[in-house]
Each structure stands twice: as structure tokens, then as C-alpha cells.
Image (cartoon, rainbow, N blue to C red):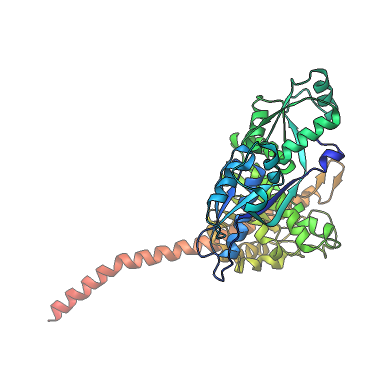
Length: 444
């Protein structure tokens, strides 16, 4: 993947929400499902953004919007569908920043961009990147341009359709470098990336997040296909807070984290969630951690990541009290919680009874079948640096095992005995009733 130069990099993919015609506001809006048209194929940057936006709107509206992919003709197919829908606010479209240019690129379009649409808001922006296959002979932008100058019109690049941001970036690159590279439009950025990976075209231009997500997807899929579980370690989700705020706002921080997570969700698309774990911690660095973001303020972000297990730091003295967040938060269906019950932040070896207590109190909130005991984080070991001595590490892990055994006995052992007693009582009840009936007959 090759970064664009400073000038080209200034051309961004922007995405905005548009409304067809003019709609009248209603106090009870929406009273029925809202359709959001996406002019590109599923799996691309705009599609992922639309689905993320849909999740957020569902919380506000109380109902899930319908994401409707209508790829083709650089967005004209979906745009025309919007103009044909009733102008009542129940059909919207999420378009890229190149949308207004279709009117000037194509000989004719079945609508007037500036009269038939009403802009609602800008939703997001992203830098673009040039993507090549792993075994490509072009290792730098210089290599690519040199080959294009040597053999004009031999190279081609894929992009998400005529008039899109990727198309404009490609043409600007050609103009500035004096090269001739053939543009090949696809019905979205994802199909263009797939063509690069398959060797059908030498390069494509894609939103950076989309390109990174695709590269990561290949790696994660290889891990899972080989029978392993992929753990997504994301200390940055929490640590970024005290590196941004201040001077940035809390909302700026959340926006950045969501961007990272959109990439992760794109990277794991199609991979079964039971093969994925998502780990969030506040870093293994020794320090006061007084500027850490509270987990309650980012739990909604954590749980929006596709995963079958959430591995969270919950034993260190700055965050142990946050187990109580699970009084109000529900695990996604089918997922489990792997809380840290021993800490990497101290050389004190936790008592097995404390480990048991940490497990049991969480199990009572999330369900005993939905919890697996774990560590807060890694012990930050390096060849020439040991933050926690190996003997202490093993002692902590031994305590984890003993504590988990105690917790299992309390959560499951007593339950089994109790269930067995109840079952035996039910089976013996008919016999007791029969004996009483016989005695009554004899007495009569």
C-alpha cells in the first residue's frame, strides 16, 4: 500500500447524507422504517459507514433503518432511485464527495443534482491510498510512476466509479505526474480491492481505512482458517483518550475510536465472531493512570466491535471498581466476558479467594456460563527487560487457576447438588403421596 503525496493526499473521500426533494418535518418522525441508499457495493467504505450510522440512528429513532445498496454508474443508479421516492424523509442517500460531479462527467443524468437533492450533513471524511498487491514490483510511488512513464496506457487502476473521489484522485495524480494510466470503474471500492488481490489489475485507489481493513482481513482469515482464534489487541481504544483530551474534546476522541473500530469490523467481515476476541486495556505502562477514561464512557464503543469474547482489564486498582458497569450493560447475544482477575500492574500476587470473588460477582451479573477468567494484559516482557519477574508471573497464574477452581465450585458445584436434591425430591413425591393414600384406605 503506497501513500499518496502531500498534494494528492489533500483530496479526501467525504461522505454526506442527502434527502430527495423537500420533506416536511413531523413530531413522530420516523413512524416507519427509513431507507438509506448506498450507491456502492457492500463491504466498501461508504457501505461500512452507512451501517455504522444506521446503528447509531437506531438508538435515536427506536427502529433500525434499512441499508439498501444500489451500486452502478458512479452513484447515478442510487441517486435516480432517490428522486423517484416520495419526498417524505423516509428515503435518504449516503454519497461520496464526488456525487455533484456526475452532472458534468456524464452526457446526461436523470436528475438535477442542485435542484433535486437537499444536503443534510457531512458524515465523515477519509484520506485515500494507492493499493498494490503484496507481490507487486511497485514498492514506492516512484516505481509506479516510472513504469507508467515508460509504457503509457499499459498500467490501469481500479476505483469505485466515474466521478468518485478515488477517480478524481487518480486523474489528478496522472495530471501532476504527466503519466497515462487507464481508469477502470468498479461498483465500489471493495470490488476494486478484490481485483487487485486477484491480480486482475495492478493497483487501485481506495479510502485508507478500507484499504487497511482489507489487508488486515487477509491476515485474520489466515489465522482463523488455520484453526486458531484471532485476538484483536486494542489498547489504543482506551489509551488514546489521555493522549488527545485535552486539547481535543471527548467527542473528538470517540470519533477517532469509532474510525479505528470501523476498520476492525471491515477487517473481520465474514469471519465467525466465535473465532474473534477483542481486548481493551489501559496499557501495561507503570504509572498513576489518573487520566484514564472510565470504562462506562466507552463501553458502547467496545461492544460495537464484532467479537465473540471481550477481554477487559478489570483487576488493577484504578479500574477494579468498574465491574459494576455490568449492572447496566448487557453482553451481546452469544458472546462471553473475559475479565482480568489478576493484574500485570503490581508484583503483589492476588489471593485465590480474591480471584474467586472477582469472578463470582461478575458471573452473577453476566451469567456464570458467559464468563472466563483472564489476565488484565500481558506482563510486558522483553529479552532485556522484565517488568514482572517470571516467578511472580507463574505465581499469579497459579493463583488465577486456584481462584477459578473455587469460583467454579461456588457457581456450579452447589448448583448441581441443589438441582440433584430437587430432582430427587420430585421423584419421591409421588411415592409419598401413594403411601399416604394407602394409609388412609387402611384407616377407613
